[in-house]
Image (cartoon, rainbow, N blue to C red; front, top):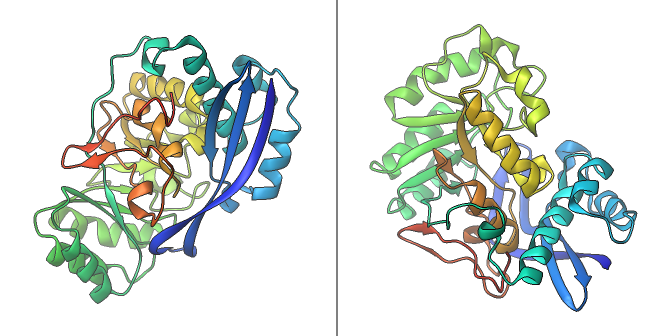
Length: 321
C-alpha cells in the first residue's frame, strides 16, 4: 500500500470573505492511497485557526506507516485535517475494493439529496443585500458576520431575500454583549440559528444569558471529546470532517450528539466535491446542511456532486465511496 499527498488549488467564483480574512482560491490537500491497483482518495483543508498549514498536514500524512489501518489511524493522528484526508481515502479504498457503495459497507440507508445552505460573504450592507437578492431563489442562506456593526447587514440580507430561511455564522466575532443585543433582532428577522457567536474557550457566558434562538457550536466542537464542555451553552453542534478527523469520528460524533439531545448541523470548509462527498452521509437527517463548497468554486473535480432544486445529491462512485 502507498500513501501520497498532493496540494491543489481550485479558483473561487468570487472572493470569499469572513471576519478573519478573504481568499480567492480553495487550497486543499488530496490524499491518495493505492493498494493492489485500487485507489482511494480523500481531501482536507488545513486551517490556520487550528495551527494547521499545508506543510504541517503534509508532513503528518507522509509520516504515517505504510499499510496503516483505519483503526490504527484514529490513534496515530489527532482529530484534524490530516486524519480526515487519510480516513476518507481509506473508506473510499475499502468501498472500491469491495465493489460496494460506502453506505452499504456502513449498513446505512442509501442517502438522498439534502437542501444545503448557500453562504454569503461578509461585506458592506449594500453588497450583502445585492448578493442576497441574487440568491433569493435559494431556500437557505448562510450569512457570514462577526463584527460589532452587523445589525445593518442582517436587515440588508433580509430585504434582499425576504422568503429564504437564514442562518448566521459569527465566526467567534461577537462578545456576549453584542450577541445579546443582536439576538432579539435575529428572532424578529426570522433567523433559524446562530453559529459560534463567541470565541471558543471564552463562551461560558452562553450558559448564563438568554438564548432566544438556537446557538450552534462550531469552533467549540471538534469531536466527541468536545461534548462535555458544551453542556448548557449550545443547542446544536456543527460537524465538519476536517475538525473530527474523518468520516469515522464524524459518524461517532453524530451518534453521541444526538444521544445527548443536540441538534445537528453538518458543515464544511471551502473545498471541492471530494471533500463534501463523505459529509453527505453524515448530513442525512441533519437539521441544517451546509455543504456548499463546490457552489462557491469556479472549477471543481471530475465527476462532481450534483446540486439542484432538491439540494446536494450523494456522490457518484467515480468521485468517492
